[in-house]
Length: 172
Image (cartoon, rainbow, N blue to C red; front, side, top):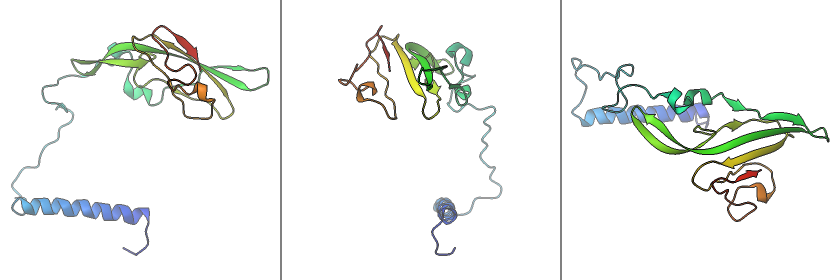
Protein backbone atom coordinates (compact mmCIF):
# COMPACT_ATOMS: atom_id res chain seq x y z
CA UNK A 1 0.00 0.00 0.00
CA UNK A 2 1.20 3.50 -0.67
CA UNK A 3 1.30 6.03 2.20
CA UNK A 4 -1.68 7.95 0.80
CA UNK A 5 -4.86 7.90 2.91
CA UNK A 6 -7.81 6.93 0.76
CA UNK A 7 -11.10 5.11 1.17
CA UNK A 8 -9.69 2.15 -0.75
CA UNK A 9 -6.64 1.89 1.54
CA UNK A 10 -8.85 2.26 4.61
CA UNK A 11 -11.07 -0.62 3.47
CA UNK A 12 -8.04 -2.73 2.54
CA UNK A 13 -6.53 -2.29 6.04
CA UNK A 14 -9.92 -3.17 7.58
CA UNK A 15 -10.20 -6.35 5.47
CA UNK A 16 -6.66 -7.41 6.37
CA UNK A 17 -7.41 -6.80 10.06
CA UNK A 18 -10.52 -9.00 9.88
CA UNK A 19 -8.63 -11.75 8.05
CA UNK A 20 -5.80 -11.52 10.57
CA UNK A 21 -8.20 -11.77 13.51
CA UNK A 22 -9.87 -14.80 11.89
CA UNK A 23 -6.52 -16.50 11.45
CA UNK A 24 -5.54 -15.77 15.05
CA UNK A 25 -8.83 -17.26 16.22
CA UNK A 26 -8.22 -20.43 14.22
CA UNK A 27 -4.67 -20.74 15.59
CA UNK A 28 -5.96 -20.16 19.10
CA UNK A 29 -8.30 -23.13 18.64
CA UNK A 30 -5.44 -25.49 17.94
CA UNK A 31 -4.18 -24.62 14.52
CA UNK A 32 -5.40 -25.24 11.03
CA UNK A 33 -8.91 -26.41 10.24
CA UNK A 34 -8.96 -30.08 9.33
CA UNK A 35 -9.73 -30.51 5.63
CA UNK A 36 -12.11 -33.34 6.57
CA UNK A 37 -14.23 -31.06 8.83
CA UNK A 38 -17.50 -30.18 7.08
CA UNK A 39 -18.21 -26.47 6.76
CA UNK A 40 -20.95 -24.91 8.89
CA UNK A 41 -24.15 -24.84 6.85
CA UNK A 42 -26.19 -21.63 6.77
CA UNK A 43 -29.38 -22.65 4.99
CA UNK A 44 -31.41 -19.44 5.33
CA UNK A 45 -34.10 -20.76 3.04
CA UNK A 46 -35.15 -23.50 5.45
CA UNK A 47 -33.93 -22.38 8.87
CA UNK A 48 -35.48 -19.70 11.02
CA UNK A 49 -33.37 -16.86 12.36
CA UNK A 50 -34.87 -17.57 15.78
CA UNK A 51 -35.01 -21.08 17.21
CA UNK A 52 -38.54 -22.43 17.44
CA UNK A 53 -40.02 -19.81 15.10
CA UNK A 54 -41.77 -21.27 12.09
CA UNK A 55 -43.49 -19.45 9.24
CA UNK A 56 -43.69 -15.88 8.05
CA UNK A 57 -45.10 -12.68 9.50
CA UNK A 58 -48.60 -12.04 8.15
CA UNK A 59 -48.04 -8.63 6.53
CA UNK A 60 -51.64 -8.48 5.25
CA UNK A 61 -52.93 -8.83 8.81
CA UNK A 62 -50.52 -6.13 9.99
CA UNK A 63 -51.83 -3.89 7.21
CA UNK A 64 -48.42 -3.12 5.73
CA UNK A 65 -45.32 -4.82 4.38
CA UNK A 66 -42.09 -3.21 5.66
CA UNK A 67 -40.35 -3.93 2.34
CA UNK A 68 -42.98 -1.94 0.41
CA UNK A 69 -42.45 1.06 2.71
CA UNK A 70 -38.93 1.49 1.32
CA UNK A 71 -40.38 2.99 -1.87
CA UNK A 72 -43.90 4.00 -0.77
CA UNK A 73 -43.77 7.79 -0.47
CA UNK A 74 -46.57 10.19 0.45
CA UNK A 75 -46.53 13.22 -1.86
CA UNK A 76 -49.57 14.76 -0.14
CA UNK A 77 -52.61 16.46 -1.60
CA UNK A 78 -51.21 19.11 -3.94
CA UNK A 79 -52.81 22.50 -4.60
CA UNK A 80 -51.63 26.01 -5.41
CA UNK A 81 -51.83 28.95 -3.00
CA UNK A 82 -52.96 32.38 -4.27
CA UNK A 83 -49.29 33.45 -4.24
CA UNK A 84 -48.50 30.68 -6.76
CA UNK A 85 -46.63 28.60 -4.18
CA UNK A 86 -47.35 24.86 -4.22
CA UNK A 87 -49.11 23.54 -1.09
CA UNK A 88 -48.77 19.92 -0.01
CA UNK A 89 -51.14 18.68 2.69
CA UNK A 90 -50.69 15.41 4.58
CA UNK A 91 -53.04 13.61 6.96
CA UNK A 92 -51.41 11.58 9.70
CA UNK A 93 -53.22 9.67 12.45
CA UNK A 94 -51.56 7.99 15.42
CA UNK A 95 -53.15 4.64 16.27
CA UNK A 96 -52.52 1.93 18.88
CA UNK A 97 -52.17 -1.35 17.03
CA UNK A 98 -50.88 -4.85 17.75
CA UNK A 99 -48.20 -5.69 15.17
CA UNK A 100 -46.94 -9.21 14.55
CA UNK A 101 -43.15 -8.85 14.69
CA UNK A 102 -42.26 -12.56 14.54
CA UNK A 103 -44.65 -15.35 13.54
CA UNK A 104 -47.05 -15.72 16.48
CA UNK A 105 -45.57 -12.86 18.54
CA UNK A 106 -47.38 -9.53 18.65
CA UNK A 107 -46.15 -6.20 19.99
CA UNK A 108 -48.43 -3.35 21.11
CA UNK A 109 -47.22 -0.49 18.93
CA UNK A 110 -47.82 3.21 18.34
CA UNK A 111 -48.33 3.55 14.60
CA UNK A 112 -48.69 6.50 12.26
CA UNK A 113 -51.33 5.85 9.60
CA UNK A 114 -51.47 2.26 10.85
CA UNK A 115 -47.89 1.32 10.04
CA UNK A 116 -44.32 1.33 11.29
CA UNK A 117 -42.47 3.39 10.32
CA UNK A 118 -45.03 6.09 9.55
CA UNK A 119 -45.33 7.62 6.08
CA UNK A 120 -42.32 9.17 4.39
CA UNK A 121 -43.48 12.58 3.25
CA UNK A 122 -41.95 13.90 0.06
CA UNK A 123 -41.96 17.44 -1.23
CA UNK A 124 -39.84 19.88 -3.21
CA UNK A 125 -37.84 22.82 -1.98
CA UNK A 126 -40.10 25.87 -1.76
CA UNK A 127 -43.33 23.90 -1.15
CA UNK A 128 -45.59 24.99 1.72
CA UNK A 129 -46.29 22.00 3.96
CA UNK A 130 -49.36 21.38 6.14
CA UNK A 131 -49.64 18.28 8.25
CA UNK A 132 -53.04 17.56 9.77
CA UNK A 133 -52.26 15.36 12.77
CA UNK A 134 -54.95 13.47 14.70
CA UNK A 135 -54.16 11.57 17.86
CA UNK A 136 -56.27 8.43 17.68
CA UNK A 137 -54.23 6.61 20.31
CA UNK A 138 -54.56 6.42 24.08
CA UNK A 139 -51.25 8.24 24.66
CA UNK A 140 -50.23 11.87 24.14
CA UNK A 141 -48.13 12.32 20.99
CA UNK A 142 -46.26 15.00 19.14
CA UNK A 143 -44.54 15.29 15.79
CA UNK A 144 -41.09 16.78 15.41
CA UNK A 145 -39.83 17.96 12.05
CA UNK A 146 -36.33 18.62 10.84
CA UNK A 147 -36.26 21.70 8.68
CA UNK A 148 -36.90 25.41 8.74
CA UNK A 149 -40.10 26.30 10.60
CA UNK A 150 -41.35 28.41 13.51
CA UNK A 151 -40.59 27.03 17.01
CA UNK A 152 -44.29 26.56 17.80
CA UNK A 153 -44.48 24.08 14.90
CA UNK A 154 -41.60 21.97 16.22
CA UNK A 155 -43.59 19.45 18.27
CA UNK A 156 -41.65 20.16 21.46
CA UNK A 157 -43.60 19.94 24.74
CA UNK A 158 -44.23 23.40 26.29
CA UNK A 159 -43.59 25.18 22.96
CA UNK A 160 -46.60 25.92 20.79
CA UNK A 161 -49.23 23.21 21.14
CA UNK A 162 -46.85 20.90 23.00
CA UNK A 163 -48.14 17.36 23.06
CA UNK A 164 -51.40 16.46 21.34
CA UNK A 165 -53.65 14.63 23.78
CA UNK A 166 -55.71 11.56 22.81
CA UNK A 167 -58.65 12.57 20.62
CA UNK A 168 -57.15 15.98 19.77
CA UNK A 169 -55.97 17.25 16.40
CA UNK A 170 -53.45 19.87 15.36
CA UNK A 171 -52.29 21.28 12.04
CA UNK A 172 -48.54 21.77 11.73
